[in-house]
Length: 474
Ligand code: LFR
Figure 1 (cartoon, protein in one colour):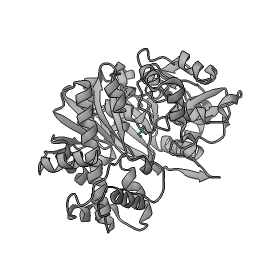
Figure 2 (cartoon, protein in one colour):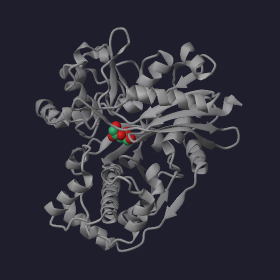
Figure 3 (cartoon, rainbow, N blue to C red):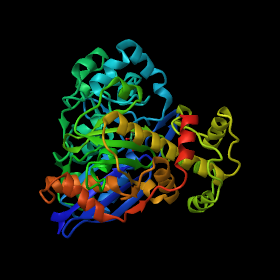
Figure 4 (cartoon, protein in one colour):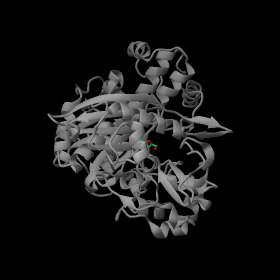
């Protein structure tokens, strides 16, 4: 019956999907619709095709059929601006666009980097919403700013709001109170009217608009529920951990690596290491750092038309270990463009022979990512004092066996890989809890553990080799 079925709209930076979970007996997850996503360069500026995404969301919801509720999550930080009539002003800009170059540095000079970190607890990434708004000529005339999942929720229901896990990535949310940081917003000269009322995971967004429901063949008023609308927050909610001594890596276009804490860490050491305190479900803190993630691989594949990922991964297994390893978090890797060329340049800059074939590049990318995972997991444990006995690697990257194995070796810890659709699972589980079908985070995690296959990778190989590379490169 529809009472136990929930739809998750989950938009990642490289693909989106609509998944349906049925909780009538345990949890079964099925895919209703999947579609590609990516940047579109228009007149020199990188955008998202937000109307195209909305169309695919509608297709997915129509394929999903009757559900008790719908939840929407997506990547963070990006937004649409609405005018006084509620119409979208311009097309949302992609966070990899260069419009924010130098803005974070300017704001840190003017306000002091300590001030910003002390208020928001957020890592400095050039594309944080605050820096985007400060470089957005439309912000001054806009009425409202809606983050991407809130924008889609508005189109589905007519209701506006700002979901708090995603709002915590703007740089404008107070990490202690989880309210908008009004004094900071004012000091930055941003209009207060832009920031809508906050809502938390599990709270209602509204009912489906009549015209939307009719188009989908669904009943009018089907509830849209606010979930942990930051995809990473949904993924962390579905980490299949059974105790507190775990780290997680939510591995997709980005690798988000860290620990879950009851409160923020705002020490100078934490700020220096650029660790972030993003909001999780139930008042938890996602203490983590962004590692460049599978973006490195995706952009290599784009440079090699006709290549096959499965073949490349197989060939990469046979490549010589540690032939070339780079720091995956070099800012030069952030924008789209010739990734093999940039990796080769970074190898030369660090006195290494660049890879000479696609499989060798893939090996280099995966070892470099494993190195980044190791650094983030170890620093998260050190800076927070949290004991870490196991690493949960969730998201699409958990299907990449070589990456999981290298991550276990690099971290010197067992890696539990899966679920691959952790984000969609976290999304539906928050809805199921709001509907009273699931009790709390522990039961959510136990259910997530049964929904998709998990695989354990024990660390093996030479730990010293990773110590040595780490000391040399990072
Ligand atoms: C992952 C993610 C990260 C965020 C990045 C940009 O999909 O949401 O958490 O830093 O995308 O929004």
